[in-house]
Length: 385
Ligand SMILES: *Cc1c(COP(=O)(O)O)cnc(C)c1O
Image (cartoon, protein in one colour):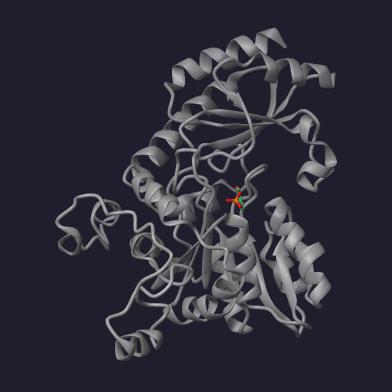
């Protein structure tokens, strides 16, 4: 389906709300019924009709339709955070006694979910280097029920051969989940590559304005309805209608924002590649990336996130570089309009659960500012260092 149609019109039943061009925020917890018979009937479809907002809300429903269409999925659910989305997706697949194969270095709280949380309920996990397909095959056990991917991850950008992993999983009746936040549905559609469940931190590109924390999960109607009846309704980590409305607004410009962010990142990459103070760059579409061919096969373009190792002797120089940037805000998260810098040396080993990260690694998120201004800023900060 045409992306611009999905973003601007799909799911919006304007005649239902007086022709209002922008969908109303159904800021209501409750919906009332005409009589007992009406209530009895509607209770049978509690999750598909206005009944109670923990289950169904008309504003959130529009968002679900758009997200599902963007990922070429049958249905989607929206959660109050990306972490809630990941937890619900994983818990919908595994039970006590099951085993999960997860790509190494996933998002920190996904790592926490598997290693610290689900382990308490008898779910075991093995983490594998996802750059080689054979590592997945080797890690699979008779009780493996789930393979969890994040391609690429959001700090060093290692990728997995998504179609390859999906084929291995299908042959062994194992479910696959991927965190597609880095790419957004504009740059990568994992369901078309055979993945069962796709999730996002909607806090990042989907909302794109750094004013909402949210998450989404996409899959078949059957999987999503089962997840809704069990994890979604039980744990209740829903998004508010107001926040859903803000994401609907953010989505109008999703394609434009993602493209701008990627084009600017390419320009900045070109500048950094030539700079003597940059030792190594991590970016899916970097010419020096050994996985470049894989990136070209499964992604339309890179995203706005990249990281690099500084060519320096002392940790203070990395700090000096980051502190000298004037046009990059120092913050976590990404995917908004504002460019960001993340000094890995500030995280310590606990911040990202990965003490193998080099202390002279810096991550940038390229937002919507003029890339030439950003390059000027990087140039002066590298000199200052
Ligand atoms: C931010 C992020 C998450 C978690 O999402 P929240 O909305 O912060 O809960 C998960 N995965 C990736 C790749 C992320 O960047």
